[in-house]
Length: 97
Length: 381
Image 1 (tube, chains in turn green, purple):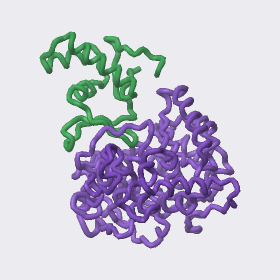
Image 2 (cartoon, one colour):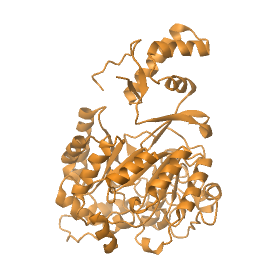
Image 3 (tube, rainbow over the protein chains, first blue to last red):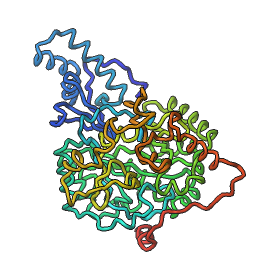
Image 4 (tube, each protein chain N blue to C red):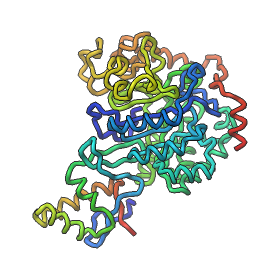
């Protein structure tokens, strides 16, 4: 995994590592990531990005977020890229083959 | 247990995020550090399938997310698959904590189908003879086979190795074994000295030199294996300056239900005399968690005496472990003597000196009593 490029390119398809269980949790009013003996409560933007890590390309993911939140294109791109890199380093996501 | 390398992200905000079900105290192995009570045979009358299901439902209503099935050996419960299925349907992340004995391929497949998320398998050494002597049964080959089967079925897997004087010098070999199996998380768990481990403390406690060598080996391996295998090192509190943040604080995020339904703030807390442990047969889980005097007793920091009460780190470690304070000082409200600020800290340093005195006469390990008939059946399967 360390040999992979940190940067995600527009045609990459980020998906959640199958070892993690990602879902909405009512009692936390948030999306959570569950893994062996661990829980991560996600903030709103992290949850919205991970929800879209479902096999679509990075471009599709970004466009969808811009549309839904009526946000600035470059700002979304930068934010998504940074979050994906961090998530990848933590092992939460991988590239779909 | 606090682990170097693990991430606890959530403040529980009053929610028992971690629900741990000790389905049975029965076990085919005889590990001399077992965390079950030394008088576990007193607590018969295990909860029924329907009673466990009620616990699962009430736990989710309280907001529990992580669920551990443990024991004893949880595979001895024939209804394990049914309980896993129920838990999965309710939205828990389900962890099975097992010795591997009784885990056949058919049952592994059934557990996968039921929605089990993760398996934590214990192994005691990379050396067959040592492993089998430590658990009191011929188990090593079966455990290795189970480990490979778990990976073949695609489960995330934690390999748990209880660390003691006997096996700590094999850390390098154990790392290589875990790497060869393809383990995702290796947990090198320094034994915590309660119950059976307390009985055998003199024989199990490693020396400081042994620990330092093992820690250096782990640091090297972490660099080498970064991203491939995560290594947890459960803190050996006897050799730390500060106590462990036990259970993230009493009644903070962790709720254990014992085989007879007793609600416990941690798996060891039955050792604390003078506390009552009402069961889920008498009370709702919500009452046990929120209202029971036992859970309220050491919650937060108001109960603290000096030196904890005025300590600038009391919100960090909550005074350490209540069970250890009781076992060693006789008062569960004392500062955990593992802390150098405790007036009782010499109890720890004396215990280390005694256990590691080269002139000390060695004693045989006191093995956890096992039902031999059950053991024979389990090993034949």
